[in-house]
Amino acid sequence: MQSVLNAVLPIFALIFVGYFCARRGVLAPSAVDHLNTFVVRLALPVVLFQSMAQITWGEVDHPGFLAAFVGGMAATFVVSFALDRRKSHRLADKSIEGLGASYPNTGFMGIPLCLAVFGERGLPPAAISSFLIACVLFAGAIVLIEMDLQQEKSLGRTLVKAARSLATNPLLVAPVIGLLCAALHVTLPIPILRFTTLLGAAASPCALVTIGLFLAQPAASCEMSTVWRLVVLKLLFQPVVTGALAFCVFPMPPLWSHTALLLSALPIGTGPFMLAKLYDREAAVTSRAILFSTLISVVTISALVAWNGRE
Image (tube, rainbow, N blue to C red):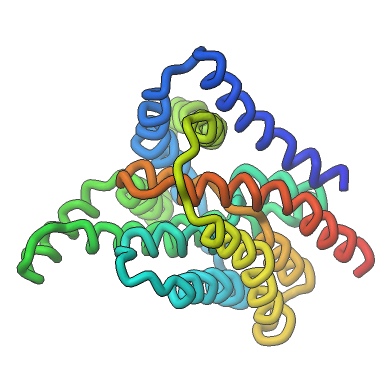
């Protein structure tokens, strides 16, 4: 329980800081958009670039773990689509909700939690899961959103416009450049590494403060049934699917199967909210789903940690 609280309490503290600053007028309502732009245009791309630039083949050469973790994310994303039967709902909105249902908070909560539960051996699986979220789940959602929001009537023009938009999106360009550096065995110079570390360290705190600022604004109407659908899919459905794949389908060492299950059971990260604000889509659902899933995860993650301790 203590390791879970150590990982969760800072998240609530940062959300509360944003909420308090908004209520007291320390930060204006416009700070939501400004902070969000800073995160998605500068801080988060730098995190993705540095993570990809420092990855090695040995870290990702675990096909069973890759298949189980990606399989759990993909199944949850698809089920979220299938459960949304609103005909008026656009592909972009469904993509953001699907992202929310399948986006575990590995960066801010998963890595310290794995270190606390499994020690240094838990760091590689946590790093790989962050890599998969960025390069598979996050990138895939952005592609779907861009495809939907293009206004061209011609399919060819739509594809060209979407491709151009994707090619200039820092959330996709940054990890691609990082992967090229890793493939070419380019070692980041110390000044650049320190720069990316300093700037990237601001991504998660600023994102959480932004959620607090948003929650302090006059309550936007949102379907609570959708919020709870995302929470249930994230905290129950995804870990069940991932656990079944990790323990029963794909062979892997016990440490990797347990970390796959624990990482998949994490609450919703800030990525879906960031994208919703960036593309001017409904953000109330994702912000509340992040808050509720994080609160409930104190119980669910504690139960998983206790189960791991008995294995």
